[in-house]
Structures are given as C-alpha cells and as structure tokens.
Length: 457
Image 1 (tube, rainbow, N blue to C red):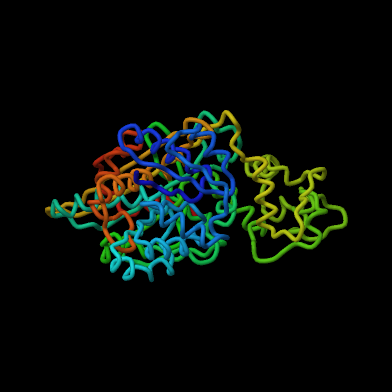
Image 2: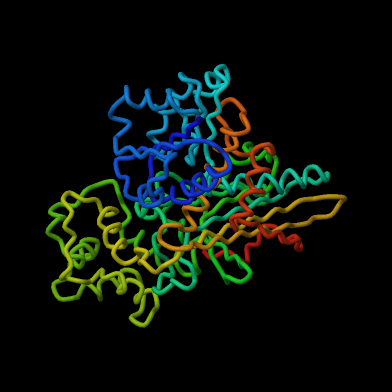
C-alpha cells in the first residue's frame, strides 16, 4: 500500500486530513501523521485503520526522520517555512516528492537542479496565498494570452477575515491565522510595486495609510494595503513588461487607519525588549510610548499624540483593546513591544467557539486586445464551517491534499523546485477545488486602470 507522510498537524491541516480520509474509500493508500501535538489529528482520524499518528519531533531525530521519509511515497510538510529545507534534502536523497504551502526560500531554490537530476518534484506555494492566488491568476492570464491579448495591469488581494455573522468588534477583525504574522505584517523592508510604468515604494511607517477600496458583491467594501514585494511576480507570471503590478492584503474598511495608530506608537516593534515587562499593566505598556507629564492622564496624552478626538471611532477602537486597563498584566518577561501587543490582541481577537472565518480573494486583470482595453475582475469568498473546518484550513490544506493525491495515484510529476503556475498543475486542482466551494466568479468590466480615486493617503 502506498503511503503519504504528513509532517505537522496544526489547525490548517483539518480539511487536508479529512479529504484524504474520504478518498481512501476510492483509493487504497495509507497516511502517517507526525507532530509533537496530535490532538487535532486524533479528533479527525477517529482510529481509521489506514492512518498512523506519531507524537514525535521529527526534526530532533534525524535517523527517525530519514526512516519515515524512506518508508513513504509522498511527503507533505506543514512545518514552519524555515524548517522545510532538511526535509527537502532527505526527499531528494530518497527520491520522494515533497509538497509545502510556504514561499520558496533561497535555500529551496538551490535544490532545483539536484531535484531535477533525481526526478523529484518539490512543489511549494500550494496553499491559499501563496497558492490559490497563483493558480487562479495564471488561469486568467494564460487565457488572455491565448486569445491574443496583452496584459497591462494585474492587481491581486487576499485576506483572512472573520465571517460577517461573527463580526462583533469595532475592528471588524479576528485572528484566523498566526497572530504574530499579523502584528509584524509589512515589516523588514519597503513595499514596492509598479503603477502605470512608474516604480512606487511605501516605507513601513506609511504602509497603512495607503489603501485601495474594493467591492465584493454580497460582502460589501474592503480595503487593501500593499504586500512587501509585488515586482518579483512580474517574471514569475511572465509579465515582465506589464505597466501595473500590485499585490496586497485585504481588511475591512477602517482597519488600516486604526492599525496605523499602533504602528506610530511603536507597539508593533520587534527589535528590542522592554525592561521589567512582566510586571507591566496594559496601561503601563501604553504609557511607555508617551511623553512624561506630571498631571495629564495616559488617555489624554495619547489623544494629543495621535491627534484624535474623544468621540472619534478610532479612540473607541483603542479603548476596546483594553490598552488603558491597569488591572491586566503583561506577564511576559523580556518581551518586545510586538510580543506584548500580540498577547493583548490575542485576548480580544480570538475566534470563539461559535465564530466562523472567511477568506476573500480579488484579482484585477487589465489587458489590450484588438486595439481595445478591457478588464476582468475575479473574486472568491470561502466561508468556514466551524472552528475545526475553517476557511483558512480549506484554502490552505485542500490544494496540497489534491496535489499530493494526484501524484500518489496518477504518477503526476514535474521534477525540480516548482510553484503552481503551470496549466498542468493549476487546471485540475482549480477544477476539483470548485467541488469544495472554492469558486472564482469572473466579471468583464470597463477598464479602469490603476484608479487613484480609490486610494487613501
């Protein structure tokens, strides 16, 4: 019996594991799940005879890792991105195909020739973003090119958000993914893109004041802020001479302006630690970023510093986070501002048992054909079912699950380090994703170009 090895069984693997369990009824294969924590996997698998669950740290035991990879046919790694490399090297050594949802790292790129020589496929960026965004974009781009069109604009936005029925705070946001990644979003470099042939750069301290408004039918208005480097996708998508290329993250309108207050205060900084942080209250933490005054309150100092009125919704958003609470303690030793903020937000923005999440994706394709400029807008909204089968788990896990099973059962293989931009990869996967409610709705519309009227500065 052929076997799949899943390394890492966090929250985003629920739909992946369930998909394989369902397919075991039609295909004879086995599954081994390896993680230090196995509660979620055990809950989903329910003693299935074809599934083994091992509670081990596969990275600390090299001999055991190699033995497991050797004894399986396909490897899916859901480890943190920086931990994929050792697994990938073993997969090449033992000629096993590897699938991940992570961006291709420099170290992974360097394995391409060796993977080709050994007939091994290392397929990365097979989640939602990156992943479904690549596949859905390339499907339309290739269609336009086949028809003789020339791409002149491409914009792409993705957001992991709370579903409308669970949206019950002033920020219109809850954590659906790693909170730390949300707190640190946009840091570590300038965001860059190209607009009407002009290169544009947004430093981190300005990032959340430059947003674009977008309408998604049935779900209202969203705003998007720029991702770090949109320019590298020109060559990846075969659009080296495109005039406008912009990739961004979606939030509900008003989030970015409010988040910018936390950035300007310095609460998102992860570059230094705060002395005696474990004994700070949330109020002390907020006061640490404000000037000393012998009589003014923390609230008054903050409003003066950020130039916001007491009746401004921005003020109420800060109050809602308990930033002025003197009874709640940080309790984290030698913590960075970002780590403290993450703790505070995790208390307020945690998905509750009854909450559902939502993934929203929006593409704009501007192109020229037969002397005319045209535009296609494509949108996808995926809603979670519950706390186990979230929209995030569906959109991250299902593309990986489908790709791995196709390789296992159909001998599907494109050797080397790959991402899903080729038709032979994206066509069958996008088709099957439709069966799971992950559907893109395309709409032909009047070409608008890069609409500066939608931008907030």
